Amino acid sequence: MIATTNQTHDSHLKSWVASANEPSSDFPIQNLPFGIFKRTKSGESKRVGVAIGDRILDVSACVRNGLFTGTAKAASEACCSPSLNLLMSLGRTHWSALRQALSEILREDSMQFTAHNDALRQSLVPMNEAEMFVPAHIGDYTDFYASIHHATNVGSMFRPDNPLLPNYKHIPIGYHGRASSIVVSGTPVIRPSGQAKADDEKDPAFGETKQLDYELEVGCYIGPGNQIGRTIGIERAEEHLFGICLVNDWSARDIQKWEYQPLGPFLAKNFSTTVSPWVVTMEALAPFRTPAYERDQGDPRPLPYLSSDEDKNCGGIDLSLEVFLATETMRKQNIAAVKLSSGKFTGMYWTFAQMLAHHASNGCNLRPGDLIASGTVSGKTKESRGCLLELTWRGTEPVQLPTGESRKFLENGDEVIMRGYCGTKGFARIGLGECRGKIDSH
Image 1: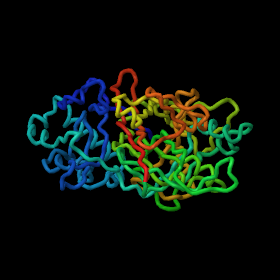
Image 2: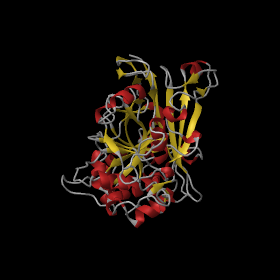
Image 3: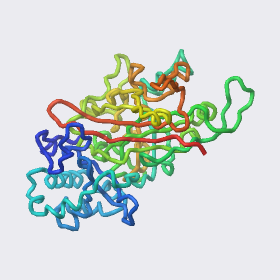
Image 4: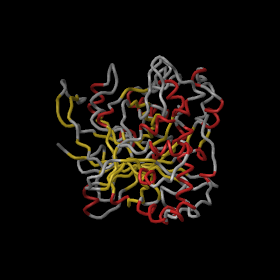
């Protein structure tokens, strides 16, 4: 079942952490996302923290001070580790109990804050004094192709008469990515080299990519998994989804064009994938669930293993997404990053529950901390295209920047910043934070 709203979503809740009450904050008390951190340049161990305003609540410090009881205590003890995997494995009952306890600790009328004022204030770490890490040990990473607008745009570039392949509306398309090269926001991205063949050349050549691109995506971390040979039904799929993050699936388009046939993406994508550091839980997203994508009349109905009334009625997420670019020249001239695109996650043809159910439908064993990503999020309009391949239409319509520069694809020194947030009437706005990456040469 899809998580429902409860008292932790009350828009009137305020926190004793003043910055969490600012309207522009990504991390009000109604959010409470999880991440892995330690103080910068310290000998501390990595550990679980919860974002609240511009601070991080050290969950392990709260455990040492005896602030949790019952199921929340068991869940909090899983946070005394260097990754979120153990917490992810426990399931929704434990996640919800811990979220409820954290909400009670952090609200402005908290009895625990009154009783443990000094200890709780000492458990807060300023975000600007913290180093963040990939939130989980990601054993496996699967990238889907769930935006029909992205698939149609890219397909029309190479197959104008038949942009969508026959299977697209029947099956969630995906490929297995490289988990070892997933990095946290802020990690430099080294421009990859590879084999590519220009249209006007007879033979391929090896060298640095000339068509480096970003891809705006949303990722979802798996909670409890399944045994090999066992499936996960669409009716239970949401119970296996822990929370979401931003994903930048960096892509070398010239390498990809040459290598992808017949087996799909390989070296063009596995050199680096950037994730945002905070995981926004599915429970935090409960107020923002929407109907799944409304298919056109005449589209095939999903097969029974990919269909449920609940998923159809509220399997989508009302999530706004933005991409910004700052070049080296812009930073030197103190020019703010320029917005390249903005779009909505509601336009995805397949839901995360459908992706998960399909992934496990052959008995593939998913494990806590595995990451699935949506594929590039694009909309109907040019302003909502989620990568430069689409935005510049294979480089034929360059993006013009305030400095007079233009971009067909990314240059060295370019920094891509992705942001995401949910907002709807009657509920507090919550954010996903940022996903950043700057291009460096070898």
